[in-house]
Each structure stands twice: as C-alpha cells, then as structure tokens.
Image (tube, rainbow, N blue to C red; front, side, top):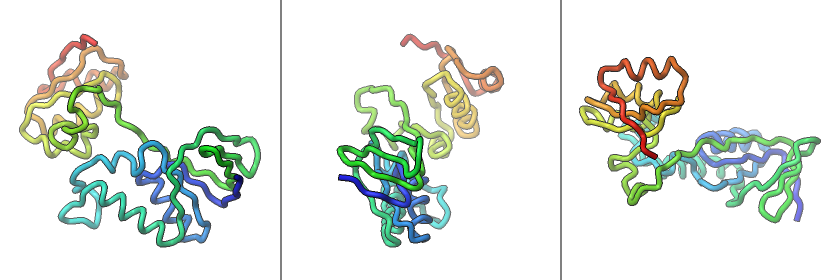
Length: 199
C-alpha cells in the first residue's frame, strides 16, 4: 500500500506533538509515526511542575495525552509504527513505514532522545521514586539528599554540575570522557566526589 502526505512527522514526544499541532492547524493533515517510545521521555515522567499553565503540576503521561488530543482535534493522524528506511534523494520523500510506503512532501524528524538505563533489577519500577534520567526535570526532588550520577561523558558531568544546586553530596564516575572544561568544573565542585567505574 502506498499513500502520499503533505507532512509526515517521525516521533511523538513534545516536539512531535507540537509539530503535529501546528501543521494540523495549517490544514496539512500530518501523519505522526509514534516510534519505539510513544510520548517520548515525558511519558515516563511522574509529576511535571516546570511546564507553563499547570500551577499544581501535571503527570507526564497526562500532559503527553493532552498534547496528542489537541493535535488530533485539528486533524493530525497518529500511527503506531516505525520508520524502517527513507529515500530523501528526491521529492516527494519515500518512507518505508512497516510494510507500507508513504510519500511525503515534508518530513519532520522529532525523534528526541532516549535515556540509557543500566539494566539493573527493579530500575524501571524505581523511576520517579529515587531513580531519574533527567537532572533538570527532577533535581528539585533531590534537595538536601546524597545522589549518584552514572556516566562519565559531557551529559553526565552537566547533570552532576546542575545537581550541585540541590544535593548535599554527589558521586560521579571518575573515568571521565567529557570535555576538559566540564571535567574541571565537576571535580572542583566541593559537593562532588569521584568514584571509579569497575564496569
């Protein structure tokens, strides 16, 4: 089966829903391919208190659902599928979505990011209960607590530095692979202690 669309959006996180809302309001009838993590990382978040318009906060999955409903109200179509390949060499773009082919005049890639979990027992059940993948989102909840940041790259060091605003003490991986400016700032922060990785 083959179909032609004005707009196809890959990804259904905040960016994908926003693109769907704006293109649907422009009467472009976007097709949103939800991908491997429908709703994006926000769908795994508990209470979101830093999104405008919700003074009491809102649960991440509810916020994602609200965004989707708003885009659907204006004509966005959502499809649970994966993009398997794309030919972007000529217009319309040829997209292989599952067993279907879709031609798209415009392709918006809003694939977002995925947390890299450790795979520890009960890790997923503890998300929102002491385990987090987003310091900016959840740092406040760790006020006056000791924390551990896993990883030695730029992202981990940036998260560790941000958490110094809240945590009393933090441990970081000293097998750092980050740029030296991040590393210098992190290891000079009084509240961060180096730990060695044995993985």
